[in-house]
Image 1: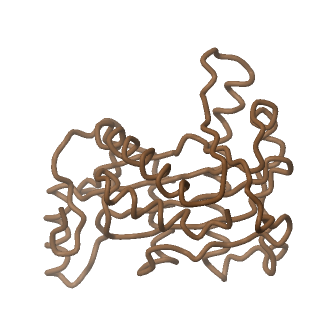
Image 2: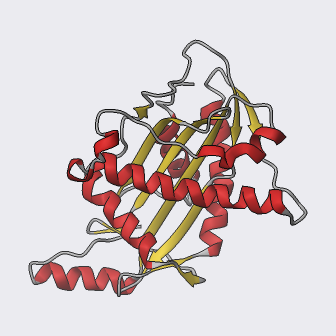
Length: 251
């Protein structure tokens, strides 16, 4: 529920505290997209999508996590909420992509542990790092990289080779989403600070999506999301988020 503009948790138990750098990334997203539900999408100047085609698209398992924002400002992952969100998101993803002229291939995790499974497990972490860099350097003009100032040139490189060998697809879609809700203690802290004329942030929804060329590894399209509304734990909230993220995709 939302109380005085604060996205508050409605119950449940927290399972683990996520790292401080992830919290920084969430706060950073709010700095340069505050007030905007979503970016309009950034197309690559190096390897742009080919319009008018009907590509085959591999959907990597969405990287989703739902957390409680504690009174002290830490994010505590909630396993129950996260699983609920993943279930809704799978349905919403199929609905949104079903409106596009694409052939969808679902990613299947490798059951056995080996070099290939370890390599594919690192791809999501690499995408998270690259996606965070894109939002930082392209979202804050003061931190725009000189070599990328007038172009969009980002890649996952040869890390996608294991996927290229396993799947016959033209593109890969990577999705990273985080949603958080203020605990009762955080809501109380917000009220106290508001009375003192100061403000502390509440729960928020942030994420990004990348469309990657399977042959080259280039990120050919990227879109970000930041919102203080919505709820990935619900079917409606999940559908809204995926429409904002993937709706404008050049597919």
